[in-house]
Amino acid sequence: MPWDDKFECMGEEERERFQLERLRDTVRWIHERVPFYRRRLQEAGVSPDDIRSLDDLHRLPFTVKNDLRDHYPFGLCAVPMADVVRVHASSGTTGKPITGLYTAKDLDRWAECMARALWSAGVRPDDILQDAHGYGLFTGGLGFLQGATKLGCTVVPTSSGQTERQIMLMRDFGTTVLCCTPSYALTIAERAQEMDLEVRSFRLRLGVFGAEPWTVAMRQEIEQRLGIEAHEVYGLTEMGGPGTAFSCEAQDGLHINEDHFLPEIVDPVSLEPLPMGERGELVLTSLQKEALPLIRFRTRDITRLRREPCPCGRTLIKMDKVSGRTDDMLIISGVNVFPSQIESLLLDIPEVEPQYVLVVRKKGYLDQLIVQVEGKKEVYEAGSEKRAEVEQKIARHIREIVGIGAQVHLMDPKTIARSEGKAKRVIDERPKD
Image (cartoon, rainbow, N blue to C red; front, top):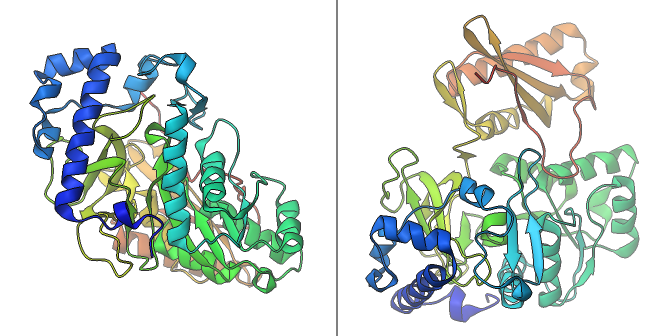
């Protein structure tokens, strides 16, 4: 049974009526209250009264990340600052951060979306949930905290870092649910092994992970190492944080909270809408935000949408796991390469650990991809001949599957920096000009 079957299992006609009403309200709200949007709507030749069906969504202008940066910090706020009860910001390390603004109702709705996500993963009021996402301006930690609190379980807000302490508390408190980034879950599993502790003997049974893209292969690796069932929550600062979409017991895509977010897929080059089932860039429109509603926000995430029956009973549309980002895509010697492609390939190689970095350089006029990946201890200790064999095996797979040549360096165990938050997987050293 879903957390809120009224919305999660809503029929098509009722859902579309609800979405259209909220879309009209949102367009009217921003037209009246946000000068930037009033100007953009006028330039597009659209007024709030022109929104008569969901198909009219495509008449509205796009919003991009630079629009938020250009109006930093509060230029797109649709309510008086006296009504804003919290400010979050993106975890980016360069340039101005992206701010997220919330009224009290916005926080309640965010908690509702996260409660749905956690419930869908199997979290229940009698669980002890360890929230190892970072706290502070980053939306992750507090988003999970709010959802878990609304759901009614016991929350241990450890934040990220202090990995040995995380493991100690997990054991001593009897943690049953772990929430963090998927890369940090692997760091926890690895550190526990170094401490000669068997996490699989703990009470831990579920993991709910988010904040960075991860492959099915990585999910399976986490499940095997921690002895848990792993679930995913998708979200982004611009839409209010985690809780936009979530996995269910079917583990086949992520359900989007359609009463809060109206999704579409567009061609990332032409920006034309694509039919259901085609892969492209995910675009989201917020339907119930007060402080910072965004219309047709280009997420840059590559996925596809599916409207199909789900064994869990939810009628919410599904999105595939994000396969990459249009702004993270590497173009190497004319070939489009997503880091997730390399990750999936590496996780199929039994001789290596799921710890890697991709380095891109210029060699003369040509691009050069260097894959640094840790070898397992027993492989590394087998000697240089064995290491060369594994490096050649990986390079051959990359050429066969991705279509480019790569230098593969098998690294000493424990030499690649571990992540306590979002993992940095790509270092592009090519000249910017």
